[in-house]
Length: 68
Image 1 (cartoon, rainbow, N blue to C red):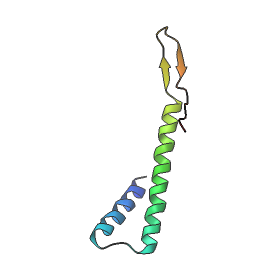
Image 2: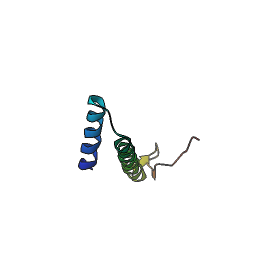
Image 3: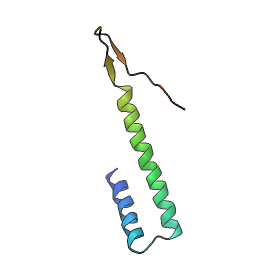
């Protein structure tokens, strides 16, 4: 993950300094998407292991509610 972030930051710095080639723009987007997927996956895993205790002391898993 650190290598991924390092490369994204390198491309961002180069973009600010001199611009990117079309290949570098494509690489940056691929890396950004990979990073986003990792963050979302980690968050989902954390939420899947989160439990809620109600007023009666009952513990239940956090329910999934989608607002589409």
